[in-house]
Length: 176
Image 1: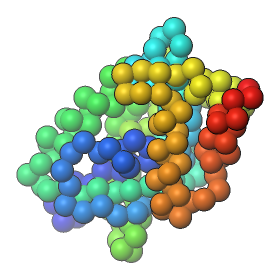
Image 2: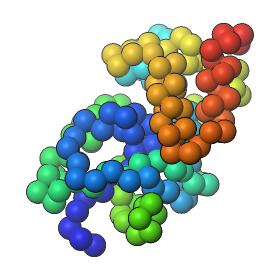
Image 3: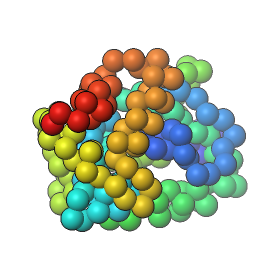
């Protein structure tokens, strides 16, 4: 451990971390996968018309981005992320080990979905997910834009075929 604080981004943190960092590297997290499984009632939807956003759910693996934060900024960044992500307490903040592109393993700060939370949608059919994404508009914009940004950044990591790519095509057809 080098004293640095690492954060793993798999959704909006990939393109809008909101904090200063020293390094940014592609990374893989084992034991967790990216899933559109959270009903968004604030950032990408509202209570009456929830949108759908990502959570890290148990099993599989997830390719994303790890951000290295200076040791003297770690507490500030951890607080910022807690305030940003824990608005409805749908996540559990924790540490896990990620495999970085440079070949090292680092503990990374992550937010995993709480399956006992009322906003946890579980596994939806693509059509169910698309309907929620199409209706979701909140303080940070639309669920569709969130999905599109995530897909764009996944593609930049070399992920060109995924459930999210398929879901975006379905949403853009608006035939759900």
